[in-house]
Length: 117
Image (cartoon, rainbow, N blue to C red; front, side, top):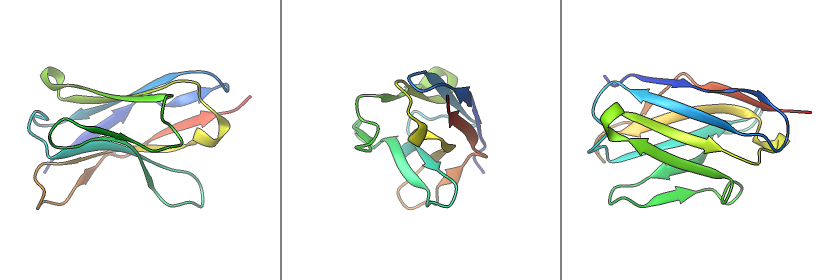
């Protein structure tokens, strides 16, 4: 069982920044994939950014150029830097990891991001 603990959410004004962290209970060095999703009220949970096997990364079109996914293998932590935040970025952000392609993914409890003036 992999445990994930997110932190770093909060309330910011439009144009502000936040850094989300996801502490993983085991080594992330060989994880098949890791990513961040978000879910706004009344909407489905969508992929925001992810690392794929082979070292490539993915960003949803709505966050390209504003969000950056990063990792620290020594700390078993995945980060999501959120810059130039907009009101439409308001959502609960979830961390997701999968150890092997054939395994189910693990989810964190989520962290709330609210962008409002």
